[in-house]
Image (tube, rainbow over all chains, first blue to last red; front, side):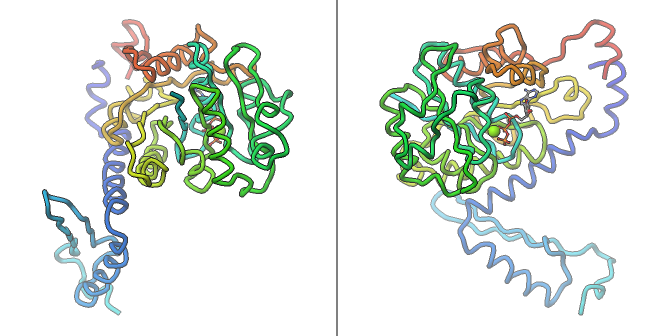
Length: 92
Length: 268
Ligand SMILES: Nc1ncnc2c1ncn2[C@@H]1O[C@H](COP(=O)(O)OP(=O)(O)OP(=O)(O)O)[C@@H](O)[C@H]1O
Ligand SMILES: [Mg+2]
């Protein structure tokens, strides 16, 4: 590694940001295309139900079907709003 | 046994036509009977890159429609005896290529050629899927840049599900990654995704890395497939890629920037 790069590398470079963003979006798109066709619609409905109780973002629900041996597992992740953020804000 | 190879990418302008011309010429140079087919209906360009634009009489669509036979439409390369080009039609009718028509022409080409190289149009629509549908192997051309990598991944998904081999449950298509317009200098500065980054994300076999090179523009100006410019970096990189494609082991070159001691010390 060069002498100047040693100091420069303290700051995160744009290529590593690109890589991280790509890894996330590619993983998500793969899960979607490899998953069953009903997944997007089901995700929307689940999002609606959650939003009746908690104001979450559009992309707060993440679903994925994974095969583990003989069985398939539907994994559902819901990112809740940060603690202390105004919970009533999105309520209409 | 003859093989159909699609050169595809999803994203436009990443170097598919450059690669198709180089690959076809590289295969022909090694003695294989090779034809390169332009699937970019309405945007014929392979003829220019191959330097045979003034000899186009009939095209792919003419053959499908029965206005000409294959021998009338194929253009023989002036440099390499066993290389032919089948030009795209300039029609604005995007539906001019039919699935049955494409199958018929490719079947006929298989009879007289060892390799049929298909230069895909950009996108993931009908034209790109027709170019890929009958293939045995795919060269996925990718630039080290976020949108190109993402599109390549989508294309890989389509190759695995929407091709004839996939639909029939036959042996899957062999997929090769060709990273083009690579700039080691910018990778070094942390401005560009590295070959290892792209490899890790796409997780397919790396066929080669083609450096960003002035030789590509110069070769296209002259109408010469860059692989025939044997003294250039891009020409050599394509030659290596073709050799690997055929099963030879070759070390990857052009992955690091050549520079002197002071450059190494102070360059970043
Ligand atoms: N390794 C390289 N170094 C420098 N320039 C390059 C390189 N590869 C391709 N180019 C340039 O990039 C441009 C696009 O290349 P090309 O036409 O091969 O891409 P394409 O994927 O076929 O585009 P399209 O999607 O429009 O069909 C051209 O100007 C070409 O000269
Ligand atoms: Mg092209």
